[in-house]
Length: 158
Image (cartoon, rainbow, N blue to C red; front, side):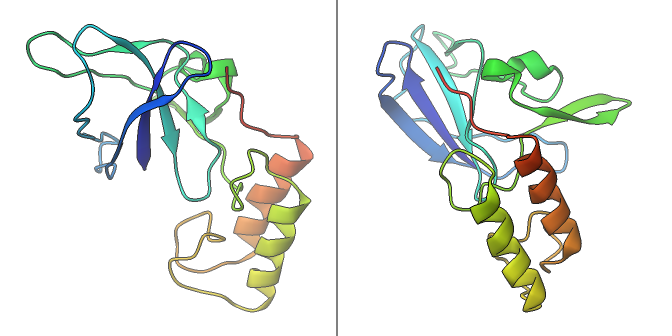
């Protein structure tokens, strides 16, 4: 994932960015070098084939530890515009929408047709059209993107 700290003042310029992997518990520890203690930021997450997702609340780093925490997964309202989907009922978990493979902010026919083409050509490996992460583009990836396109899923940002 790529993590961005954005100013809370329009036009929300990027202050800092970092990359980090989620561990098996769903936690990540990005390191921001330009974050200022006691300053408010929006946290924005991007993934290679998911919609850009903004925090609905501001994030502030502690004065002494220069650390901040934010959990997107426990409440839909943690994403700006409630722009996540529930993926588990027990424990309750929410996740980002996938399928925006061309990174234009919406899951649409362009994304779906690219996935369909790769599935038809039996494309495998670490490719952007593999939404499920199983290293193979198939009907499951197509169905995920097609459902999100049919529901007009788009990034919701300030």
